[in-house]
Amino acid sequence: METSIFTSFREKITENCGKVIVGKDDVVLQIMICLIAGGHILLEDLPGTGKTMLLRAFAKSIGSDFRRIQFTPDLMPSDITGIHYFNQKRGEFEFRQGPLFTNLVLADEINRATPRSQSALLEVMEEKQITVDGKTYMMSEPYMVMATQNPVESFGTFPLPEAQLDRFFMKLSMGYMTREQEISVMRREDVKDIIATLTKVVTIEELKALRAAFSQVNVSDDIAGYIMDLVEYTRNSKLLECGISTRGSLALYRACQIAAAFAGRDYVIPEDVKTEALYVLPHRLSVAAESHLSADKFVENMLLEVPVPLEKL
Image (cartoon, rainbow, N blue to C red; front, side, top):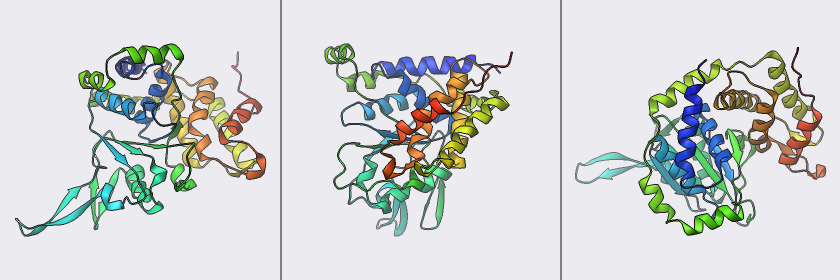
């Protein structure tokens, strides 16, 4: 398999997004992995860390449409999927598309909306389609939902249920920039002006080629067994109420393949599994209250305990 198409794609996207978001190349890489895999992202971070700007820059880099939805307690499902209204001039009902009809969706503070409105995302995330009044509309590719939530302020929120969390391919956190990086951001021009100058650096054809090629990345029996060892560890652990689902194991498998290709390899190594597990697994776990562990810490401990396959000489 020719991995140069992956490394070239990565370099162009990273360089373009780096003009807007400084020092977050690892986050941009994970967004690329999610996009190639056809998944969705849950971004849990504090306000003002550049989540919206990052996705705007990413959308411009791939030449796709972008829409942002601010989730609030009074948001109705029809507000985001669309609604049929009566056109008095034509004397007939017409469908007005909601903001989900785009390529990249930023569902800002998704846990602010009621479960009814949150559930309006389930069909489009799983099937890439929206059904309104019995009629189904297919979404154009690429299609990705990035939902954000504030990890600090929980008053007036509706936590996402496990079934909905499992539909997110990975969970990311941007965090603060370093001191030097933030000073450089202070001195430069306004970020909105920078985004306005960004141009598309990859094509839809390149994206389709990557999606068709990543499945050719070789995953040895030992690496596949290592992934299953991690999955079964979560299912058998007494510290968890709920382990990794089959959807989760498939997500980790594909994420490792794409990560390896972006690294210029046509085969997966244990380090790929360890890295991607930190993004793909924690939000799918339901940690027992008596364990006094966060899901992220559980995964870190698990990676230290589960034996890593060694290269056979």
